[in-house]
Image (cartoon, rainbow, N blue to C red; front, side):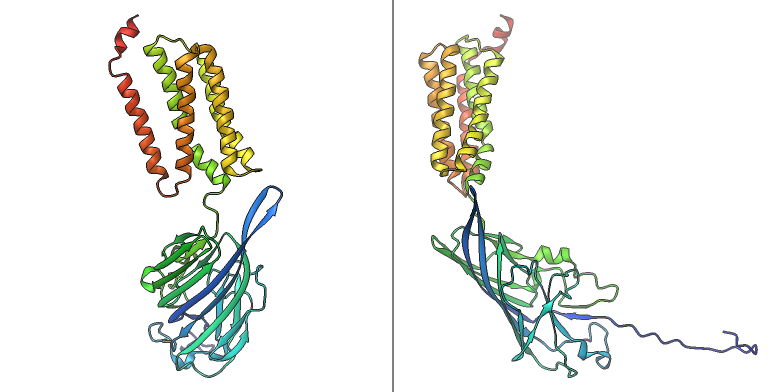
Length: 375
């Protein structure tokens, strides 16, 4: 650049930037015990838990070579250990980090990129980390729904037990071992870092965007402490089989019209359909006050009697009305058995629809549809 006297001068400007280098633990061990209880508010129940979880493992000496960082530029006094926790409001006690035998309190706020909720402890040392250091963080917190973990270590092992007898294992990894009993469950995960999409170390400088909240969410593994088949889920599942009832009853009416020349008005179809739909409303409302089994029985008896009584007037009573009542009772019984099956519900429903279709095809196999239209 030109100087005031017209001579050219060359000046070099040195800029100093500060970035954070992040290192995940070499090994991560998770030990947890979640004790659940049911809370009641009015007619509604909610499952909550108190979990005592210990995060432990070890950090290897940080390798700055792949990150292209000169060791002499590392500001060791600013080193910290941080964790991300989805919700700290349920934490019952202060969180303390055991770092190589030295205990340090963790303060609110996470330094994990993309996460603000959590806790951080400053290591406060000017000495480089030249050897492996073991750590542990005990957590005691309340929660609901479930517990989620991320496989931040090269090797990850998680062991969780609970008194909840109906766990749902979710996420990217399923337990390597599990034992589900009437009085609770035990589960153990063994996960390596090959199953995730983010690296073991990175910096906050541009070009290190592989560690994102989305990539972490995709690697989570969890157990949900929800009742898979409570009254509301039973009703929800039963609604999925509503087409079975409509197909069965309306097909029976249609066969009466085709084979027995029985005239049925569309309004009568509408009334029977409304009664079939009312069954689900009765089931849901009654099951909020009494057990699902008794609520189901009451709703079945009420709906079957109402539809059978109504059909007696336009079907002429006798065998046809009995067939409607017996058919409804049989299908409702089949539905109840199906709802109690967690693993084979879809298979049993598909088989039932297949059987209904086969019966309809068999009964109508000799019907002359063109002759009926011509008449």
